[in-house]
Length: 458
Image (cartoon, rainbow, N blue to C red; front, side, top):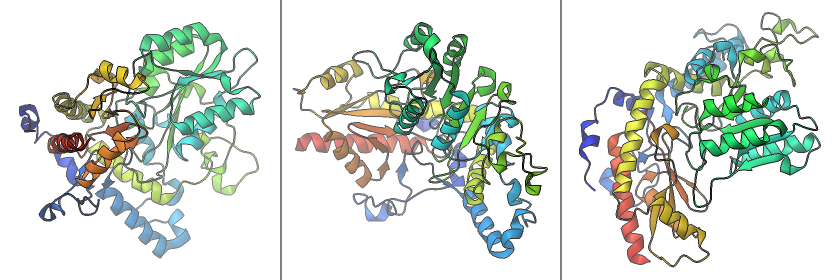
């Protein structure tokens, strides 16, 4: 498939140079066995930043510096640091950069913990069920870790698992309607203690209408929180302005902090004086933290939820990436580029000979035995750009749990790196900081080649 004119015209946009700030895996390092030998040392086609972001060169530099400080200064690095990053304050540079990314005040964010641990901390504080108001509302097929957390929280408070209300799409559809979410909140709000959705849904890529859901939940007396694992660094957020009660996120996806990177959380300033549960010494007033008084004195706001000193290596790895985001101008210019990249990907996919309209795909998937044996795909991510981020989720047909793995294996063999979700979905996500129009076009060209081969062999 030849590159379309819009893509070709946009090769040298203002942000394209930030690709050089990242280390890109090669076809050889990704074991792309079907790429010719003379191309093996070229960068692979990596569209998997929604699962694990690439390594920023700045992060590599900072981690190497901290290893050197550890080796030469040892414990003294906590207070006397050759790069003026004393470990006792290592998270301080993160907080203003987090605030920029999620639309918050600096005192409303904290760099700490991990996604699910932070979610439990927030629920321990904000989920206060009563006999009348005890339910949790979320989307069906929320990320499993979230589902486990919700279930364990309601059970710990003595409620049955059906206290978790999971809202599903309408029959024959893949994503939720805003009006269905708002209607459910209006009808059941008096019994709901906590409304918590994903900002961007990990499976479908749907970006939920966060402000309207937050306002509707709070109008019914509910607390509203958000899991921003797939939203932070992907879409522009205004958590303070929207009045979000709390939010949590990981940083190893679009925020490129590295596998298992440190997490983040947001607590709106209206809760600054909320008594902190599960207190730890890093949430204590830093002016007396190292005198170790017997009584806990929380830092006002989100940073009072900190428990232990953060991993220095994980924190500076994140810092290196956030410095690149800041240099790029933050989320608004990146969002503009993301819209163009993802729109270009969608346009090329729609032109594929193997494209199946969503309604047709849904009808095939609802049958126990799909009479159509041809291999095809559809996109289950919303077509409205305002309702999605960078990710497009492709469902492969026949939806039998075998088609998708076959496609995935052949894409990987040709050096196109996406992300699979069983049984039938491959997620492709062009990241605005480092992907190019050539990446998008090559991914679709390779997909065409793979689909042709699989259909011939079917």
